[in-house]
Amino acid sequence: MTAFPVAISMPLIDLSQLRQALGPTAGRFDVDALDDCSSTNALLLERAVQGAPAGTVLVADRQSAGRGRRGRPWASSPQDSLTFSLLWRWQASPARLAGLSLAAGLALARGLEALGFAPLGLKWPNDLYAAGPEGEAKLGGILVELVADRRGTQAVIGIGLNLRPPAPGLLEQPAAGLAQLGPLPERHLLLATLLTQLAATLDVFEQQGFAPLRPEWQRRHVWQGRRVCLLEEGHVLAEGRCLGADPEGSLLLETGAGVQRFLAGDVSLRPR
Image (cartoon, rainbow, N blue to C red; front, side):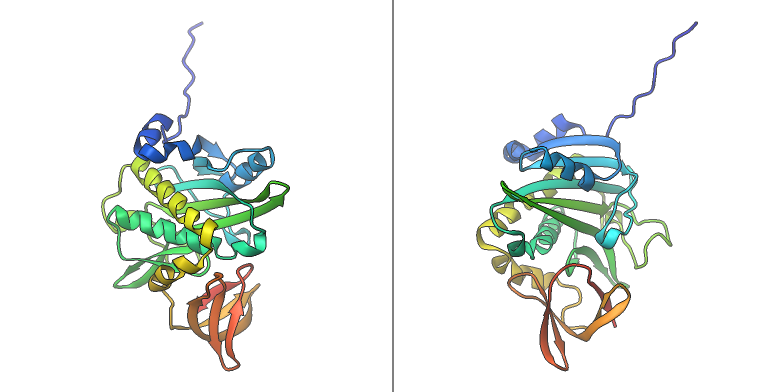
């Protein structure tokens, strides 16, 4: 009987190439590349509970149960997206991390702009947008999940970035891909640049909170000054003019009753 070799699926990220691309920051990360998993966030949360170190990264070509905020599914495919999760730890309580998803979004924008992609925008609390002549379209999303234990607060920061636009009908809102803004960078360079910017931005956030990052975030806020409504579970919570985020990362909305503050959570922002 003739023995045929078994095809082995290898992940697109080669760890040795990634270490070279990371350069001096390689020592800050412990990266595991997978060709397939249920959800990088779910798997990394399990590893965090088991004692995985800060800086652990899971990057997967495919996710069978990827998700965004409020449990929405996040579609990913090897050639059309970059999906990864990063574990970070703080001694601060979860209440002090309200602006974490905003800080992560700013880091992504910084990294992509360093690679020549612009203009980019941010939407409270966790979306990255491509701005163009036809308006804004979602380029990526962030899902932050926190676990507090005796070691402090463990944050798993999940990133989903569209390299090419998703198929029509997959998302409720307009979506874009990085390839629409320019030539796609080499995958290892792209991931290394984003991780390096995340580490630098999170260092500032850990020491000083969101306040020093706020002016730069505000400049990129795509709905700054627009009339919007806030929805939760399909119900309108408030309407007014969007003023962006406060120094703690909460949303500020100018309404008929004055300026109101809203925390991140199961709240969605929609143009009106």
